[in-house]
Image 1 (cartoon, rainbow, N blue to C red):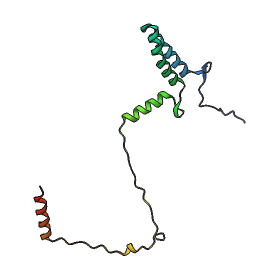
Image 2: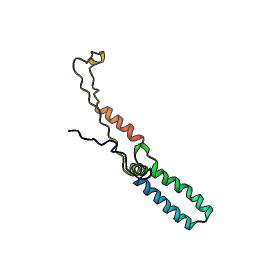
Image 3: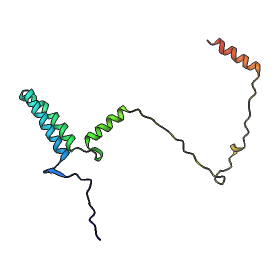
Image 4: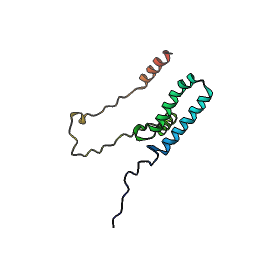
Length: 132
């Protein structure tokens, strides 16, 4: 039996011409805001205020940074700014086999511990006390 496998499942359906439902809602919202501005401002102030409003709504409807809607991108940016950042560094552990270790001259150095006497400790304590 042959089955048709759907393709292009990530493409949204077009509702009104070339617009999807979300794009159409953004355009309707833009028209509503422009109508409110038209009733509030005189014509010159309306055209000055309308330019940024149109740019914002067109960007929200059509611009997709990193293949995601702009409103999601802005929400993620706000969450990134607000949330606390935790940086965790996990030191990688390397397993070194005995065959790979080379003999170096420093490998045979014996560490010597310095013995501190009571006279040296009291002398250092006097030096520290005098530097107040």
